[in-house]
Length: 257
Image 1 (cartoon, one colour):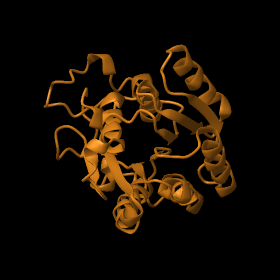
Image 2 (cartoon, helix red, strand yellow):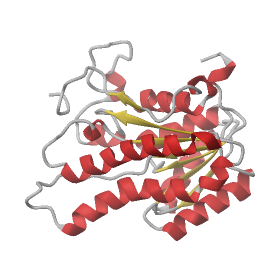
Image 3 (cartoon, helix red, strand yellow):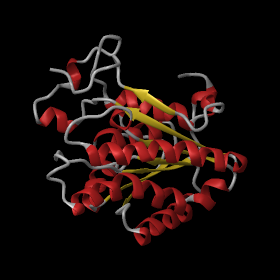
């Protein structure tokens, strides 16, 4: 992406859930472009190690790790305040923090249901609502990370699918409300991605994936980070309130054999 409109250097960003996987890769690509980036996770040590790795890579963008639980509004308010204080503002918010566990609806506890809704949906509300003034100060971009499960059902994931479907609708509705304030709100819905967790469980090795292969049903964290990078740049200036599905070959309901 050599064209200047694809670049987002000189901006400031927050990436939630950035201790590993998609969130970590987004932060790495942002800082490589010169974006000053705050990364957060529920455990400080988890983002400290990411920040150290990025610092050692000599990326031009600054990296600041902050402990934050997106379910806790006081914690989120502190995250936003410290970001604005550190960078002088906020241009891009990436709501990536999420969680899931497998459970049938019949066996689902109320606490289990609420936990997944709280992290995946209420966390997006907390972060976006807390950042509203900073984002509207000069215009900004919100990029929510949803899931293909928001669009197609999967057994044992009623709680997760419901939460992510809520994220999609929140994206579209808020985009309409905030467009007049110069803030674009969009969403990315990944399919099955070869994260470190997938490698650990033996599902897939991302080094074996051929990026040029259009037949794939498995994506890489880089490919999702690229879509986020595009949505954060001025190259996507006419994209507002959209959910971009990135899942490779369509119409598959479960991860590949």
